[in-house]
Length: 424
Image 1 (tube, rainbow, N blue to C red):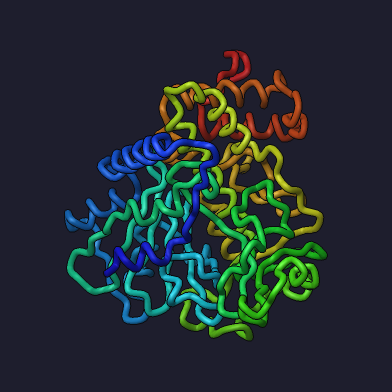
Image 2: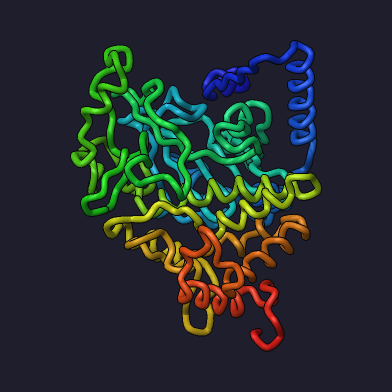
C-alpha cells in the first residue's frame, strides 16, 4: 500500500520526444532503467546508513515521543537543529493528503541531511547526501520499536528527485516555489518551481510559510489563493493582481494556523535561503561526480566551481533578518580561522554569506568527490581567488572577498588551495 501511495503522490513529469522513433524511445527508457537499477543496487555511504549501523549495534537509541514519534530523537542523532524548521503548505510531497495550509509539512536540515515530518504522519521522510550516488531517500515508520529501520526508497522518489527539470538529471534535491489555492494545491502553469541562488527573492518561497523581515523586498511566501484552483479561471490574469507586499515581513504564524503541534513556531527566511543554496549545490556536486570520467567532466566541475562561489547570485536590496536562534546554531557549526572568521558567517544585507564561498566545501559530500573533481576545483579556486582569473562573472568577487576566502581556507582547510610555497 505504501508503494502505491508514494507513486500516486509524486508529481508526474511527462517527457515528450519529438521526431524520434519508437526504437530510440525504448532505448532511452532502457538506459534510464539500467541507470536507476544500478543506483538502487548500490550501497549508500551517507549519514543515514551510518546512523542505522549505530542503531543496530546498540550505540544509539532512537526514542519514541508520544506527539512527534521519532522526530526529536532523530534530529538529535543526525545533529540537525530544531531551529532549522521550515514549513511548507503546498501539496508537493508524497504525504500530500496530510499537508494543507492549516497543517503544513515541517522540514529540518543540516549540511548532509534533510528531514520531513507531517502531523499524524505514518512515516518520517529523510534525504541524505552520498558522494557517489547523490541524493539517497529513506522513510522511517512512526511506530515504536526497539531498533527502528530506515527503509530506502528508490524508484518512487526518483520520479520527482531525478529529472532534467527538477534536479538537472541526477538523484538530487528540489526546493519548489509555487502558488497554491486555499487547499495547498499548486495552481497550473503559475511559476517555474525550482529555486537556486540565482532566483530573485520575489520568485522564491511560493507554497512555504516564511517568518522574518526583509524590508520593501517581496517574495511569494505566506500566499495562497482564497479560491480553489478550479474556481480561478485564467491563472496568469489572476496572479497579475496579487499583492505580494501584503504577505511579507511576517513574524508570527499563530494567526494563520495552529503552531503548537510543531517543535518550533517559525519558518525562518534565512534558513529557507540556505536550504535553496544547499539543494542546488548538492545537485551540482552529484553531477560533477557522475561526470568525472566522461566527456563532460570539465564543464560539470566548472559548474560546481561557480555554484561554490555564488556566481550569478541574486542580490538583496534590503536587509533580511530571521531567527537569532537559527543564526546562532548555523554559524557555530563550522571552523573559524585565527581571526575568528568563518565561511558560515551570514551577510543578509547584500547577499547570503559574508564570504562568498560555500561552507559545504568542508562537507562529507564534497570530501567524498572523486579526486579528479576535487583537484579541478582546487586549481580553479586558486586561480580565481588569487586574481589570476578575474574574467567574466568572476570579476564580481572583490579583492577583499578573494583575500578573506584564501586566508580562511588556509587556516581551516590547509593544503587545499594550490598556492606557491611563499604564499602558504
